[in-house]
Length: 182
Image (tube, rainbow, N blue to C red; front, side):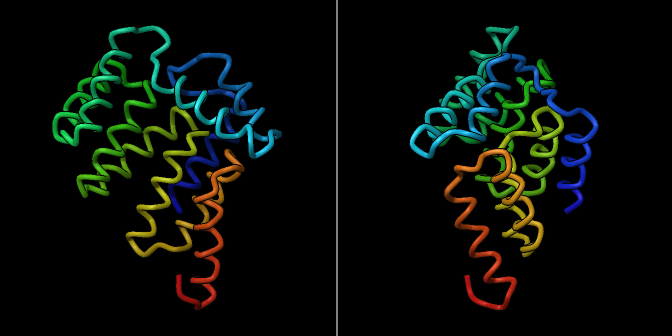
């Protein structure tokens, strides 16, 4: 819940500004479009957002490191992916997606505390990062913090109204919090 308050505070203090190094002006338009699109077009918009997030706007070497780290993730070379993303973060600490990828790797490796810490860094830089919000909600669920999971999934759904999994989890969590089984 504390993290959601931090995110909310960031959104209030700096409305419409992206903290991430990814300063591509197309991101703002894509997020606006995501709010008003149809479900059939939402996946294309999401994919465009993800494709911009993995590119460092000012450093092609950072983009190359991102791609290499993602290849290591796909090859299930998680320790190596973690090292690559850590080096990338050292070189480009404002590259939000580097933090997000490392958070994902750490989550898969079972280090949920480190994953959560990285997610906080993602959200400082890109408060609209619906993937990071979803990851934080999953961590809350695993820690038994169902109210935190619910509010975090709701925050993700506000950013991206077409996250089917988030809506399903919200419905299930509401039932669970009312005393019914997930």
